[in-house]
Length: 308
Image 1 (cartoon, one colour):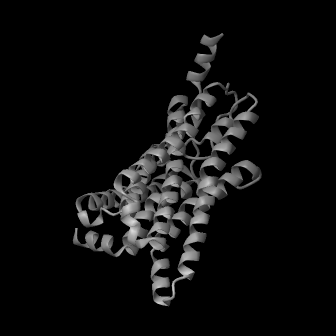
Image 2 (spheres, helix red, strand yellow):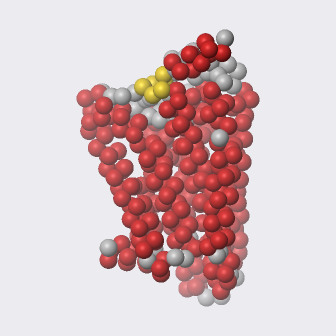
Image 3 (cartoon, one colour):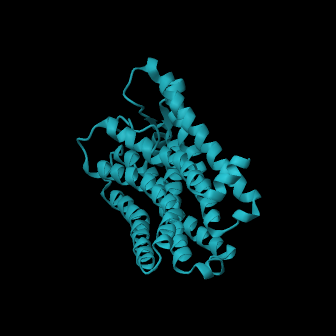
């Protein structure tokens, strides 16, 4: 019986979905995706190179930014191959094991990015609340431990997902509504009862992104409380100005991600095109826009990029 089940699992093929357009236009659609991939890869790589080679940028804020850039690079590398495979080669099929590997890394990196944004909010709070003790609080060993805890927490939450999906039998059409694999999508293709696994998926989302977003909100409440106690109006604006880049990164990450999660769980009659576009935005916009936002907003980083 187990041999039969193994054969069924190995033979499962999922079909990925692109934008609902004629195949003749796929080549033209691939051009902006290639452009976004190149810009996000080059942008994040340049930021990493500059932060690594410039001792003046070895500060906590830039170290957290480099950790965010590594995560964004990972998301781009994990997601873009199947997207370009659809539009360049009309390759929609993906094997079961490849699908599990992709969804594991996509969700893992998204959860790590959520943690990075939380750490960057904590960094902004320390910089504004205790500027004289900023570097003594956020030392390099402490930052390394915070990053390691973030990775381990995401790993513990995401690691069970592929093993849970391996236990299912798949007998539906197996046509996914995105150009890459997601846990909620693959789980819905199963013939078995998925109630418990759906609850676990929701739990991981709330425990990771829900908790992170709550702590980020509390961090900004404390930042505003600190800023309002500053007597000088100019110093108040200067302090708030240091948070603009981080706020942009938060909007780019959480807005499409929350919208997509709501549609997946409650929007059964929603437009497939809307789901596809939100999916692209949730995975492609942050790696593309974060380097641009931080390069424009951070004076020292912008000067080094111009010099380079």
